Amino acid sequence: MEILWFGIISFMLTMYVILDGFDLGVGVIHRLIGKSETERGILIKSIGPVWDGNEVWLLAAGGTMYFAFPKLYASSFSGFYLPLMIVLWLLILRATGIEFRHQIHNPVWKSFWDTVFAVASTLLAIVLGAALGNVIRGVPLNQDGYFFLPLWTTFKITSDAGILDWFTILMGLVSLSTLTMHGSLYIAMKTEGDLQIRARNFAKLAWWFAFITSLLSIVGTTYVRPEFWKNYSEFPWGFVFPVVGMATFLYIYIFTSKKQDGKAFFSSSIFIASTLLATAFGLFPYLLKSSIEENNSLTVYNTITGEYGLRVGLVWWIIGIILTSIYFIYIYRSFRGKINSSTETGY
Image (tube, one colour):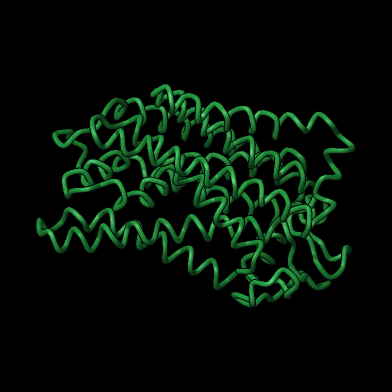
């Protein structure tokens, strides 16, 4: 059951990054490719019907973590209290940027909330990547399951770890470039004309940044956590994840160059999923590794809840995921197709 619930949480977090990831990417490029108020309105309309539903995956993953691995939830939420508050405020600012924009038809008002939406989306993409970097690197967990990290350090490779240090910032840049590419591909798929052309060009630019930062992150991961690759040497079948990731990453550029936007966006989604699953494979069985004492680390085995609760929870999780899937299929089918200035979406 431990492996099953580890897989369930990995799946839910992956779905969040894929679905809300293009929302974040649209926010990042919102003011960069939207040259007029009308074009920025089209960008908002493209995600308007789905952005709030996409964020449910993050909340559901947090709730599932609390249920299946309560000790992990307690340790991580107490140690990362300030960063989690930052994430919460950035989520709130993104929401207000979207919702308040169309409340008053004034250019200054709309420009202000467009900027709030863009800045909050950019910072959130970086912070989420930095969060993954902290999980990969490990934290100074004591024997009671608690830890403290400064919010930032000197950013030198040899300096002590911080919530924001050279490695976590690098992972934040990986996240930013990848989600910017993902969001640009989504806009290229959903729009037409000059806006679509600019989105394609921006996707290609972001692709190169994602390529460079991803290579650097592999080197950085090997430096901060050499044992990350142990599972790959013991279970070679795990290489399917990075191999699929590399193949789909190449296809992103090929399909974008051929103006096959739907295939490029699908390839981007598979690339993100493969990358995250490859990371989960390398981390297993650790959920939060201690950087000061191996025995203090939190694993799927020493943080799991009771067997009976897991079995009952699995039944309700299956019911919930079926209902959620029906909802998402309905929403995305209802709002499929191209978006333009005359499209009615409520945004």
